[in-house]
Amino acid sequence: MAEEDVLVGRCPQCGEEIQVPAGLEAFSCLYCGSRLTPDDLRGNLPPAEALEGDPAALLERVRRDLIGCVADHAQLRQQITRNHYNLAFQNYEVQCRAVFEDLDLACRLEPASQSLWIGQVVDDFLDRLEARWAQLGRAGLRRDEDKMIIAVFLVPMVGHLDLTISGAFCQTLQQKWVERYPKSPFYIGTYEDIAGGFRKKFKLCFITTAVCHELGLPDDCPQLEAFRAFRDGYLMACPDGPALVDAYYDIAPGIVACIDLCGDRAQRYAAIREAYLDPCYRDLQAGRPEACKARYVRMVRDLGGAYLGLRWKN
Image (tube, rainbow, N blue to C red; front, side, top):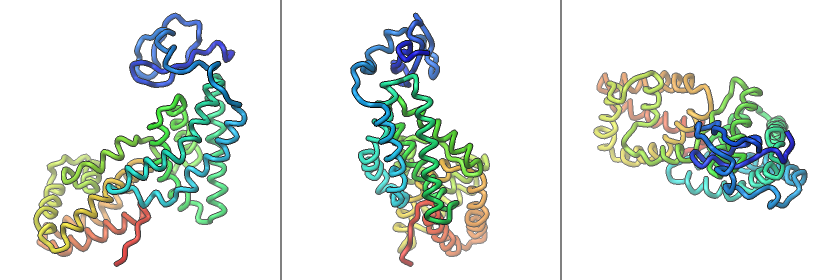
C-alpha cells in the first residue's frame, strides 16, 4: 500500500494509534472495537506533510543512542524502591525520551514503514546488547541485569510517553527478546502499576502475598495471617523492628515487580517459598519468632541484592 493511501491517527476512545486504508468510510478500532470514521482520526495527530525531518538520519540516531538507554543506566536497579523509583523514572524519561521521539517522528513521516523500521531498530538494539554482554563477560548475568532495566524502566517509559509507536515498539521488543532468549523472558508492565505498588503500605505482605497468590491461596490463608501477626506483634515490638519493617516496605514492591516482569515467576516464587517462607512459617508455628526474624532479615537482604543490586553494611 502506498504511503499516501494510509490514514494514521489515534482512536478517540482508547487512545491507541491506528493505521487504516485512507479510502474506508468506516472501520473498527483493532484495540477496543469502537466504530470510527476517518474524521475521528483526523486532527489527533499533525499530518505527515506538516512534519520535518530526514527519516534515515533519525533512524541512524535512534540506532546509535538506544543502547545507552540501558548501558548508561545500570545503577537504576538500586533505585527500584519506594523512596527512589518515582524520581528515578522521571529522570530516566527526561534522559531517554528523545530516542523514541526520533523514532516516532521517522515513522510518522513514513507510516507505511513503521513495522519494518521498528523491527530493524529492535534487532539492532539486541545485537548491540549481546556484543556488550560478551565484552563485559558473564553474559547470562549481564543479560538478566539489563532485562530488569528494560522491564522496569525502558518499556514502562515508552508506554508512558504515549507516542504513536509506543505500543508497537514495546510489543516488538518483548516478542523479539522472547524469540532470542525463550528461557529468560520479560513481560510488558506500566509505570502506573509499578509505582502504585509502592503505595500499598501495610495492606499486603508483598513477597509473602505474591508467593501465596502464585499458589492460589487467599488473602486470609493461615500463612498470611501468621506473617501479618508476626509483623504487627513480635517484630514491631523489637527495638529494631520498625526500621526493619520500613526497609522491607521500601524494597519489597520493587522485588515483586522485578519477579513479575522478568519471567519464570513460578520457579522464582517457589524457590523463595522453599528457602525462606516455609522455614519462617514453621518457626512461627513452633513458637520461635526470633528464628523467624533472622530468616526474614536474611530474605530481605538476599533478595534485595539479587534483584535490586543492593549491598548491606552488616
